[in-house]
Structure formats: structure tokens, C-alpha cells
Length: 491
Ligand code: SF4
Image (cartoon, rainbow, N blue to C red):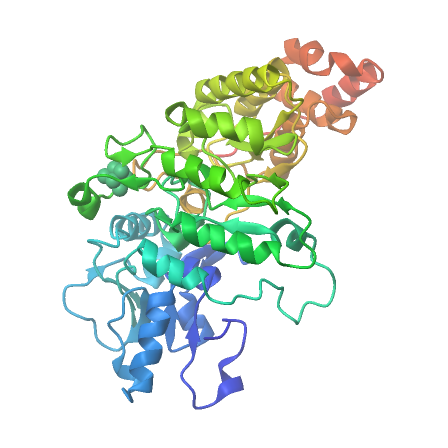
């Protein structure tokens, strides 16, 4: 398999297979932020012969075995987790609006998004079909989730855990992952902006405790290992060992998220396996520190008291990164995230437990600015929440649409594809800058934009509340902000 970046002409006569997260997200016609237009499936644009989506180990092995057995490549069309181009449509496929339709109509785009979402279930999803001109893009149902044994077999392979040799300069992110361990795959959170569910799926697939322990043994033999495991987790750290407890309900489930709008009654949220895993790993004599740096879903922690206790006691390296992303209920609803009350409860508990343990540790919250659904008024609400709870945001993630996500669909169409509701999309550069400044209200360089935002929303009464700590120069910035014309509202 090779990357979609390699032109097909480089391997004349050989069948070309594309895969990886980029191919997964771009398997259907999709909105592309960089081109600011709807692009064709990457299978069409790359001129590849087959696309593998998802983690794809089973599809790749099945494909290789059939090719080794001498089967003609063009006949290998029915593998789960693959997409191909056909001249005629297969029977029983669910037909999506064509590329031509979704690129010219946002309603058609939303319709295609919803239909494709409804068929994502690996236990019951149907084959999808989307016309691209005269060709039919066929997307087979996703591959079945891997069981523990299959997963363990993969993670027992001799991965080098090294960056690709083509990278000559040091990669800062590599230091973060060099001594980290993936304990599971998949995320059932269904956050609107996240691409992981589209790639790894909603089903949590956990390795055995034994397999994770063996990986730690191997890591500890590395000459650079000094006793610190930088992370044990997955897309969401506290989902290790979780599962849907009702196979029948799971087989027909069309929910985007097992957690939103409420935690599903079938979701087994017990933390015993996650707690046991961390305890076993801590016992390894080579380990001095074992951190959990993957994101955690704090709305689950109420049901996971032992995991929460062990996390606070043993696995926070001074700062715990959490991602409420917003504290405006209107925005968290669009994001499919828990709202401010749940975050507040978590914060209080975390601080209490840290205090009881005599530990000086804090929460570093991650927020997204300019997410679809977020207005300046919402962001003022967030800034007030941050101030009230004595939180400082260090880095702001400005929303950038990734292909295939729900938030990207809303960004492009201005509507929620499920409810049809019109959603505000912050596109104006001034508004985007002001939203970011409101998250960083405590920094002197944000002052001018915070003032402009407060004035825009007729909330000059909050100037002292948000900027009172920056008395110097406030007068001058206020008069500058007053000189700026009010920005007309978009959408
Ligand atoms: S039935 Fe509930 S727990 Fe099971 S997959 Fe669906 S939403 Fe998740």
C-alpha cells in the first residue's frame, strides 16, 4: 500500500491501493477547507484502484492473501472497509446524492452526510454508492471491529516505533509518543469536530492487560528509557475496557455517540479494567512515572470513581489536559460535548482530590474558537466562565474543518444535517480573531479585540470584569475600540 501522495505513474502496471486516515476521511465527495470547495472522492483524484478505510489491517491482509492466491485484482471488490470505482452499480447499495449534486447544493451535501452516517455501523451498515460523473464510487461497509486476540496479535509485531527515515530533522511530537502505549482504539464520544470516529469507529477495541504489559517490558529495554511512560491511552484514555453491553442494540445502533445527548443505558462504563491495567503497569520496577496524557471524557468520571482517584493520585504530571472545548451550552450541543455543569463538577472534584493529596496540580483546559454554532456572545460567556473558575487557556485551537467530520459539514452548509437547524458559522476574520482573544482575555495583547467584542455585543459593562487586571492602557484601548465600526452580522 502506498500513500495517496505518490502519483500512480510511479508504479506503472501495478495496482494502486491508498489508505491511512486521510484516505478514510476523503473517501466520499467531501468539503475541502484548503480549496474551499467540495472535492471528489480521493479515490477518483488519486487515480488509485482501491481505497482502504479505517485501520484496515484485516482488509489489507485479505487483499494480500487473495492476490497471492492469483486472483485478478479487479475481481477483489467485496472486501469490507474498502472502496472502489465501478462502471455499474452493485445491487442493494444505498444511493447517496452524486458528487455533482453535493458540490452544487448544500442540501444535497447534508443529505449525503446523513445517509452515510446512518450506514456507518460495522454490524449492519450497507454498501454506499455515489456517482462521480459516469463512474460509480462504491463504499463497502466498514470492517468488523477487532477482538482482543486480533488486536494483541497486531501489537505484538516488531514495530520499530521510529519516525519514517525520510524525516531528517527532529520531530518535537515524537518525544511525546516515543515512550507512550496505545491501550485501545475507537471512541464512542462522537464529538462533532473529531475525525477519529470516522477512521477508527465508535466501537472501543481494547488490548489485553497482558499485551500492554508486554509492550511496557519491551519499552523498558530501550536504551533511552529513563522510567517515564508519557501516556497510556487511546483516542479517549478512560474508555479502556468499555463496551456496548447489548449486542442486539449495538448491531442496529445508528447513534453518532454513546454519550450524547445522554449516556446510553447499554454503555458499560465500568472502570475496573482500566484501573487494573494502570495498577499492573505501575508495579513494573522499571517505571518511575506513568502518565495519562490522552484526552479524558470527564462526563464519564462520575461513573468511574476509582479511575478518577488513581488518575489524580498517580498519573497527572502536574498539569492535566482536559478538553471541554466550550462552556456555552448552545455550542457544546453543536459539538456533542458535555456542558458547563459537568465540567464544573469535574473541576471541583479534581481540585478537592488534589488538595486532599497535598498535590499541586492544575487543569489545563483546551477550547476551540470559531466552532460552528459559536457566536461572540457565546465566547463572552466562555471568557466569564474561565475567569470565574480561575482558569487560564494557554493555547487556542481555532476551528479548521477536517474532511468528513460533522462540524465540517455544518461549516460548509450552515445547517445541522440531522436536525436541519440553521447554525451560525463564524467566517468573518474579525469575529474569528475576537473569539480567540476572548479565550485569551487575560493576555495584554488580547485587550483590543476583547474590547471590540464587548462593544459589538453591547456588553461594555463587562470591561472591568474581564480587563480590570490590565488597568494600564485600558482607556486608550477603549477609545480605539469605539472608533471601529460595528461589524455587520453574517448569516
Ligand atoms: S446501543 Fe448504546 S452503547 Fe450500544 S453502541 Fe449504541 S449508543 Fe453505544
